[in-house]
Image (cartoon, rainbow, N blue to C red; front, side, top):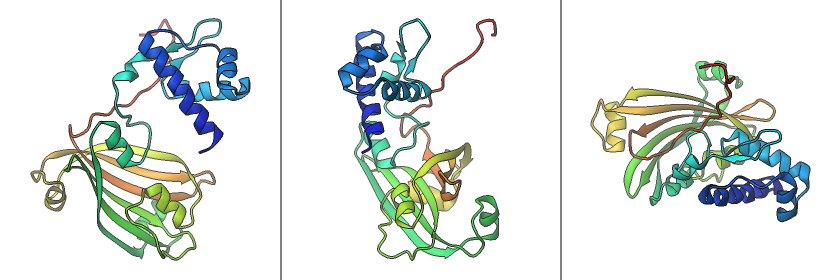
Length: 240
């Protein structure tokens, strides 16, 4: 792990203690001394913490902690490996690869994801379970970035697969949530009634250069897992 990730984790530990005790976060100088890090590094990490909704900083005032996050087992607005997401809710996670194959990219995919026509694509269908019960179904697509798909492990996370197939580290995801009803095939895979409403999520992973590393279509069984999205509210005091 990088120093940045390590510092972020340590600051989240400080946040958790403050949230559980009902106190504010220590100041930058105190944090830098306690964590044996430079103030600029701590300041940058605090910015990331604020962007993720953990704290709110105001000039000349204490750093306020968002105690409501203590009651959120997993966050929808933070992409993590699905097994880790399920585990964070207190369930026993599992994953099954239902299918995987390499096929040419379609014309529509090449246009939508700005990938060269004719590029071979690894396509996978995966099923995740929580305590043995199906909760998510995903169809992942990873274009081969100049490498042959030899020796890859289809059960790996999509981040690891993208790296294995020649892509740079994924920096961002474009996420489009929606809703749909289960087809006969998807209902059978998830063990749910055909026509049942499900949460849908369309994802596109993008590297620092702007290249697409993967795209995915997910189906989430409604109510199977409890996770939330956190957003900072920045509205002028005079607005309603």
